[in-house]
Image (tube, rainbow, N blue to C red; front, side):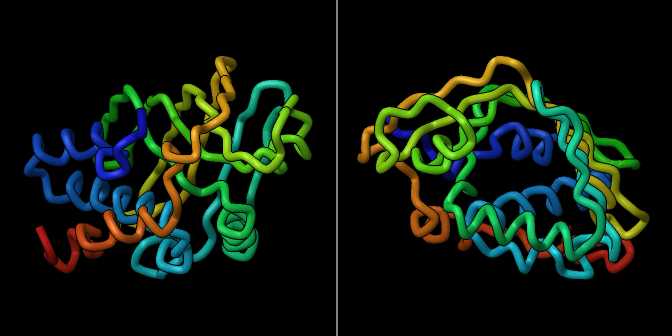
Length: 199
């Protein structure tokens, strides 16, 4: 059954509906905007000065690979460029939860991510059809600190050991084009507690 890209951040939508705290809403809307721009391949908007600090740091903890640090704006830009270029940026959340406070948020969720078989094979996975798309499912935790202007300071990502790979029926593949068609019309504008716009 094909995943519903319009519900890709359902746990975040639920948290947003339950809070009227301006700073918490700013953080959650930043996350929604950030995540949806990412799957749409429009990563330039993520790096905007009203979305992210000038020197962000990303830390990826992956079983069997250890810690990988992406340090600084140029390195983060290269990271997002590679996702779009390699066609591995479409992500849908399964079961998940999120907690937000004045410092940022922490979330745990089941990540479903589409990957080209050729790329997985290059990374060492046992793939029988490099021309097909695959769905890689992993439990993931993230902690994102924010600054006083509700901008991302860091991404701290912790991946589980339950990684699973399944070949996709072509009818079940979600493309970047579909993401743009369905997500961009509902993309929240940047929300800053300092500007008061928008709630």
